[in-house]
Structures are given as C-alpha cells and as structure tokens.
Image (cartoon, rainbow, N blue to C red; front, side, top):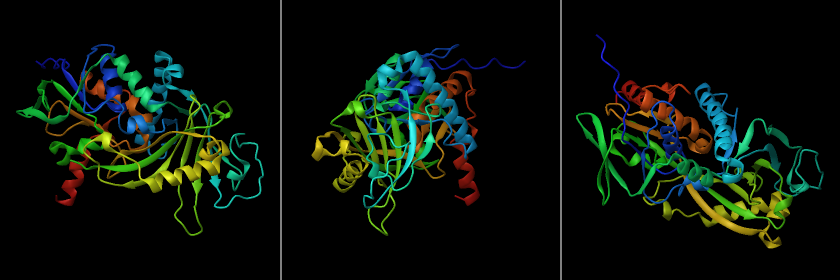
Length: 385
C-alpha cells in the first residue's frame, strides 16, 4: 500500500526581507489549499538593500532568448498585473505600464533634431540617432521596488522578526529551525534562504554554489517640473569620451514625479551590513552628468532636487540563472537567490513557485528544474571537484 503524502509544513521561516522573501511569504499565506502564515526574519529592515534601491522595471519578453528565464519572466509579469489589481498597486507602490526607448547619448551635444518618439522632457540633443522602441505599455511596466516589497509583505500577514540568522539548524538531514543571534532557535519545518548575495554566507550554500555581488549605483532626482515627466523608461548607450568604455545607464521616471537613474556597476565583495553600503563619489558624479545630458529637468544646477545617492549589490551566479529550489541533502531547506538585475520582475513567480514546492511538493506555475541548486553538483562532478 502506498504511503500517504507527507502533510505540508506548518512552521515556515523565510530568511530575508527583500522582494523575494516578501513574495514567498505572500504566496505561502495565500495558498489556495494550505494557507500557511510564515515567520520572516530580516537583519535590518524590509527592502533595506537592492529591493529598496533597484529600478523596479518590468519586462514581459526580454528574457525570451533563454527559455527557462522566459517562462519565469512571463509568469511573473502576469503576476505583477494580478498583484497590482489585488493590492491597489497603482496607488500603493506606483505600478504602471510604460513606454520604453533605447537612446544613444552623444559624447558631445549635436545640433538639436527632435524625433517624434523622443519624450518632450528629454532634450533633443540627448539623442545622437533616432530612438528605438524597446517596449510598449503592453510589454513593459514599473513598480517602486521598496514600496512594492513592503506592500506585499504587509499583505502576507507574516510575522516579521528583526534579527540576524546565524545558521540553519539541521537534524538527521532535515531542517528543524534557524538560529537567530540573540534570540536562540526559531523552530521550523521548512526554511527559505532569500538573502540575495548574503545567501552565500551560509556554509550549506557555499558547499554547493557561489553567489556573488555586483555593486550597482543609482541616484534619484526630483525635477523642477515633475508634472512634465511622462512614463517613458530610457535605456541609454553612452561613451563619455572617444575610445572610452561604453556605459549602459538607465532612466526610470516614477509616478511620484521622481526620476531614478542607475548604472556604473562593478564586482565587489559584499559587506556584512546592508545599512553600511554607500555609493562611490566618481560613480555618483557620472550618473549626475548623464542625467544632465538627458534632460535639463534633471540638472541640479537648474533646480532638480537630489532625493538619493546610493548603491546596492545584485546577487549573481556563475551561470547567470537564479537558484530556486530545495538544497541538496537538506530536507526542508529552500533557497531563492541569484536573480541579478531581474529580481523585482521575477520575485512574484519565484515566491509563488516556492510556495507550491513547499506546500504541494511541486511547482506548477513554472518549471523549477533549470533553477535547482542541484545543477551545480553535476557541474562539480564533471570537473572532478
């Protein structure tokens, strides 16, 4: 006689208060058959790292060249629309469809030659060639990432604990809890490690795969006439000087009237404390220069207000795919990290798939096999490691 399936875990601890952890908590608590209210443990504060400092750009089909990522992105783009409808996303966290353009920013301002695709707030001299349309309101959208993360976490009803997770407690190959600094062990039947690049600090993760940090800089400006800024996201190509390195900055106007500009990234070791991360002056200065070249509305010397100058670390893996699934050899321990620059986009489908995997035993919304941490064991075996 076949044994009955194991009951779903009732004590789930999500480690990490970023967008992936928040979405996982939300879909655990709203699971249609086995709603489970998790405990979420966060070292600093929700959305304190990349989830609060990212751009929040969403694209339906920009991952279509990689089938596994395409399925994740398309499912997640659809979930973003559903969440916006359920949580009043337009008002709660700035969800809106956007136009998306590619613009080649000249090294030296040419003679102005306005193009019909160029938004009115972008200076005509900002485009060295006619802009290209990369996305329409049907295929691209945006959220304010910090507000989105906090709204989803609040809607989950999860108990949030501020504390540092020191280790996952395992007994006979199965998770039994997490040790939280100064609080002891929080009991758990299932644990989710969703700590971005800090996921790699855990020994059980380091033994299987590497997750590194890419330091990305950004600034947020409030233009002198925010009501003139239209919902056009800009992907730029810019060579500051002849023969110099090509840069790929991005510009995201937000419904609040603020404009987010990002770029200037580099590989760098992740610091222990997310609150200690600061931008490098040269990178911040370059972003201000780029902002001023795009639009006089974004020049601080002409009245634009500096809202933020900041940096964060994007979690990256060796093969460019996120890691989502159960850790090999540790029953009940799940991981979700390595989403790189697409963490805000792919968090809903990641959280929904993990909730299904934890509570149903398998994910239905998207095939998680390509993202399994076990894939790295096969690679190590082939290398003889």
